[in-house]
Length: 223
Length: 223
DNA sequence: TACTAGCAATTTGTATACAAAAAATCAATG
DNA sequence: CATTGATTTTTTGTATACAAATTGCTAGTA
Image (cartoon, protein in one colour):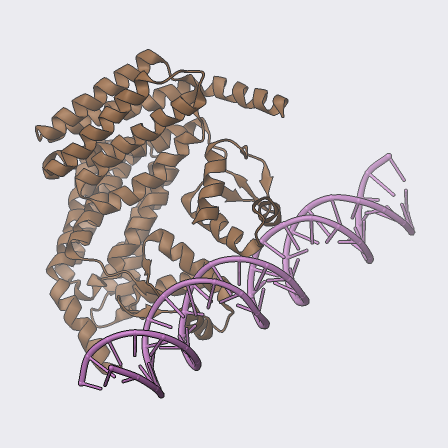
């Protein structure tokens, strides 16, 4: 599981840019292991749809604008449904977990300094924690399985480099609305709120696509 | 890909019952290969959620009634959405493919003799072809990726052993309704029709769960 | 008989070697 | 100079060997 997570994190953190060719031996040298465990991780990453086989080696998959739209449509559908089901099935324990995650989220936002990549990462992490708590509260294990695969893709774009204070506060407010709806068992309201919330995420990624591309170029210059 | 499909088919066809312990070496002997390609296939099957790791070896995952419900909820959501999107984005070529698949479906139903397992398999296969055509017409590649993982699970229950003529004809009729809605670009109607259609599939599996269990017992006696 | 220590057997994890396939290089010829 | 064919190199696919871990078994002791 270690190799898999290492490569996955490396992809999300932009160590391997899309299009870059990765061979098993290259990765084996980098991780100082033999090819066998590397192969396993690569096959799993392929099953996730994160990397694609090349004629020779593999490459981080490059997603188009249309991919982003489709993936967010899917995520909207799945997480919206999860929220509506959470409103029906949530236990007191579920509510506590969501509230706790959201409290941490508020904290992280207040401590978030845009320049400090660590504090931004913290925000991303705790945000995910809230979303995960909602999905778990839905009681549908299988939906969780699929959402977890959908969620990682947008991270590749690292749109969190362009978070601003107003946006984060608004996001926190929406979390509160979702939480309230789930607490009050207003299933349809929870669904719609989650829906909107995720579409905002999509807009953020799409509006910053150019910035993201430039950022990658700058990073390449530095190395 | 061959090893993966072999084991997957074996699971779907009930060669390995849930709970049965499978070791890499056992499978390697069965397929007359070394463990290396077997390992790969096993890891992929695990990623699909079809088999679960044991302390020693792996086992075909055993799904509970609740799992079936959850999986069908998920499939309903995804395929319903796919149908609604198909109604919006469908091209003439898409329509042709769906109509063609449905024609084959009608043929297969008419040729279907309950006792002949081959003709029943044909019905299952062509039915899948229609559903796949709808998903493709939605234009969302990513949703296709996830549906393909969801679709295989119910096959493990082999509820098609209990298909009857009335049910198949009704199913064909619903396909026609879905197709018509997509053709007329009635997005919401397509979604609802697909929704209902899949829920009927769920009912069929759930009402025959006991028969299925007995069938397995009989098969074990025979061997 | 019941319990435990230690040994044997099973099974997975990792490394490595070699075969096969695919691509790149290079040379020869028109 | 271009094109083609052969050779070399790179890279993956598969087999196998061995290490590590885990289970089960057996024998010995109380």
